[in-house]
Image (tube, rainbow, N blue to C red; front, side, top):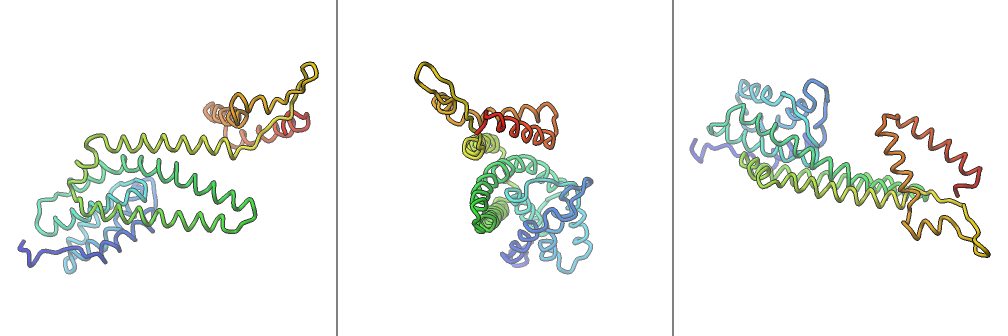
Length: 274
């Protein structure tokens, strides 16, 4: 196809596609196709721009994107951006088969889901929720408002950047992203950071202390002060691993919370806990 007749996706079309994916990526989420309908919905502005007067190719394109698909929404914006670039090449006469587009989606949706879940769910949401809950517990109405506002800015900013980056990289993105173990390094790094955040939350958000003390000669030693000298926030750490162990053994969360509730009452009444 000559340069004069070449169809180029404009910014408005790309933004509409990104917006559709961001807002309705999980529309009609189901076990048969997972996010397939949402992905197809995000491609409709692209297909309308590329095939404005060809209903057959429009229908073929929609069918092409109604297959099984599942990833994390925010960082996963990279994939519809890449697919938009491939659809553009296909409409302009490039040899881009259905299988090529499908293989791109399949190759990237798993790794990007790992990255997105580690960062968005394991780090960003945890930190923002901790801040929001602290403010809310103090009676500050800004707690939930700040969480919604900051998380929305994060999701929209990262999603838009990923989508446009994917479009610019095109089909060569798979080689660039998967080569050199980049995905693995990012996932491991995010996992380590998530563990650091979790450790900080365990130490600061689990409020458990003991009132026990003992006397040696004329000196009274408080057990809590002794434990803090050994390992600060040791009791919260013990409680955390205790709960983790119960869940690993198959004890349901409701039963676990019930056990904690009863143990807290008994230990408080007997003066063991503060």
